[in-house]
Amino acid sequence: MRRKIAAFLCAILCLAAFTGCSKEELGYLAMSADAVSTMKQSETTGSAEIYVDLDALKSVVAEVSLAAGSTQEMTDRLLADMSALTGKKTATLDYTVQMDLEEMSYMFDLDLTYDNQIYSFGRMYYGLKDGVYVSTEALWSAYRLLCEFTEDDGSFLYDEAFADEWKAQLNAEKYICVLDMNDLGLTREELDALMPEGSFDDLAKAALDLYRNGFSGFTTGMVTEIPDGYRIAATGKECAQLLADLLQYVADHPGEMLDALNAYLQASFAYANAAESDTAMVTDALADVKEDPSEMTAALLSAKAAVESVMADECYSILLDGFSYSADMVKQGDRYVSHESYSFKDGNKAVFTMNSTSTMAAKPNGVVFPSQSVSLDEVTAKTTALVDKYDPVTGVTMTWYPADASSTAVLQKTRQTEVGALMGSDTTLVDYVIQDGRAYLPLRDVCDALGVEVVWDANTRTASAVVDGTAVQLDSQLYDGVSYLAVRGFDALGYTVSYVNEDGTHMATLAK
Image 1: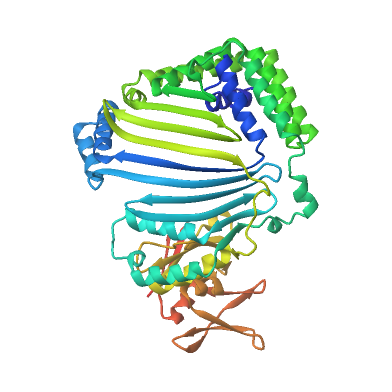
Image 2: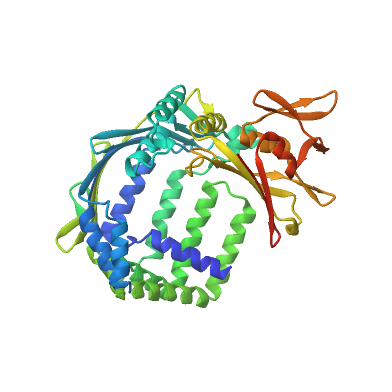
């Protein structure tokens, strides 16, 4: 448990790299907490401008590769693989985020503009009681980007007819229900019980107390006060040094940090309505670590040594030297406005920049979820049927391992191309039967994968397959109400059947 606490504490420190207790740092944290606390129902709109110089990026890759110990020949091969990446690229992300902390529900709306094309990903919803919904626009835009950034290899993915049909399918529905909380089998009362019962204001206060009490003698020197707000600014090396200093500080003050962390976790558990047993387990574990903090301290110092090793490494130094970050957060009336900037330079040459601006304002009435949607299974089934039309299944391969004492085999479809399924998977797990030394495979599962219709005669309790419009009687066997067919029996469907057993791996292949 002590190791787990140490690992958890290291993770907390990595996430809280700008933690400090100067007047400016605490002011920034208080403003951030106030923004969320006073806008439990809010809407944030923003835009991010992204710039990449791909030629400059390749120069950095070469420099890092050589610094990491690669030979010039290896580096040249790496650059040859990146030969298609040339020129300067820009993109714009426009987004809207709606948040309702009372109901724990969120909405994300994202548009990407790249190479004078707009890729709209539509709205995506998440709610602790409502589930997850994704716009069909997201699938269409992801597909368009896939085609944009990959080379046309002649497969169906680049076929305009396929694209037109799939777009028509997706346009028939607006939202896909990826997760319906009702499908989890929970009652409305049980779903309500998942909602936090504590006060978010109390949780925000506890977070500030964690910084005040746990890091009372620590400061980053990276936060300054500006009119109506605060600014953070740091280089890559400063961030790395900050993390090392932070690890050292906590290693030198384990008691204060553990007490502050315990108080914060107590508030977190109360907010999340956690079981008393879970709260007690963590409290006892922290008390145990505090009694003998040597293992935790050793872990923190080991982490610090790792950070310092990275800083001294020429390869990582190239990356740290080039990185810089800055962010402003100001309050303008009843709104909060943020500006963030990330950049990476190779000397004086900009390799990558991202500049974003966002505005957060109160939005009453919370997040309104879609009233109509289609299930993910339904969209997957329709998409798979369309893929089957343009990239037909030409056979299947079944693989099983009797030595594992398992009755489960892997069923893999084989298609004309190597693209595979666009949604879902061409691989499924099915049961098989060994009888008198012979392997029997599930008839309907195999035929469904091949696109062959199976007909069941309830009177004779026999199965047949429809091949080229003709019903072919099959010598199948019933096991637990399921029809199975011997491996060689599938040649009646017009497929060539091959079977191999290599070192206990059994594989049956059906191919046209």
